[in-house]
Image (tube, rainbow, N blue to C red; front, side):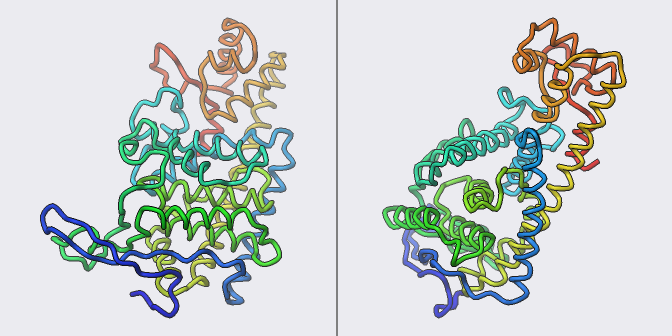
Length: 397
C-alpha cells in the first residue's frame, strides 16, 4: 500500500503486547515535516482552488457587510458542532443541538457537542487577540473538547501517551489484533510525536503567502494534523477547526462563519482515502482537489444559509414594525434569538439589561406576534424560546 519512493513519511517499527495474542511488532507512519513550497498540482486542481477562493471571498464579503458580523456565528457554529461530532460517532439531532442549553445539556452526547462550541469560541478569541497558534493552545483546545466526557480519562489536554490506530481494513481477519487490522497507524507517542507537532506549529507561524495558496496551505495543515493524530481523542474535530483557523490566519476569512463538516461528513470514505493517498503515495493532487471542492461547497452552502437568516431577521423586524409594539429592546431580542438559537427569559433579562418582569413581558409579546415560540410547549420551568423561522433555515426546512 505504501510506495517508499513517494510516501510523505517514514515507516517506523513499533512493538506492544495484546492481552490475547501476546507480543507483537508492526510499523507506524511518521509524517515528514510539511514543505515550505506548494506541492505539484494539476491544472484542474488549480481551477478547483480558484473556485474555492471565489466562494470563500463571497461568503466573507457578506459577513463583513453585517453591522454585527458575529450575529450569525453562534447558530452556524452549533450546526458545525453537530456535524463534526457526527463524523466521530457522537450524534444528537440538530434540532436538539439548536434548542439545547449549553450550560445544562440534557445528554452526554449534547455535552460533547457543546464542548466543541466552547472550544471554537476559545480558538477564535485567541486568534482575534493576534496570538499565534501554539502547541499549548492545541492541547488546551482538546482539553476543552473532552471535558466532562468519557474521553477525559485518557490524556485530556495533553499529547497522547499511547499508540493509537485509525480505522479498520475491510480485508482484515475478524480475529486480527487492532494494530495489524488498522487502516492507518500514526506516529508513536513520545518525544518524536512532540517534535513533529512542534514542527507543524512552527510551519503555521511562518508566512507562506508567496509560496503556497492559502487554500492549499489549509489542506496541507489539515492533512498533517490528522496524520500525526496527536491526541487520544478529538483529532478529527480539532483538525477540522484548524481549517477555519488557518483560513482566518491567512486572511481568506475575516469572520469564522464557515461550516465545513457537513460536506466531509457526507463523503467520509473518500475523505479517508484522499488523506491516506498523501501518506502512502504522495498524492497531494487528489487530496487538495477534494479539499478544495469541499471548501467551495461549504462556502456556497454557508453563504446561502447566511443570506436566508438575514432575510428572516428583516421579516421578523418588519413584523414588529407593523405591530403596535414600540420598543428598541424588541429588536435586540430578535438579534438574541438569531445569535443564540434558543434562550431563556433569564438570558433575555441579562442581554437586554432589564428587569425579569420586563423581559418576560417582551418575550410574551413577541410570542403573540409569532416572532418567537417556546421550544417545548409543555415545559413548566426554565422554558426556552426560539425564532421558528430562523430554526427552520438552520434545519434546512
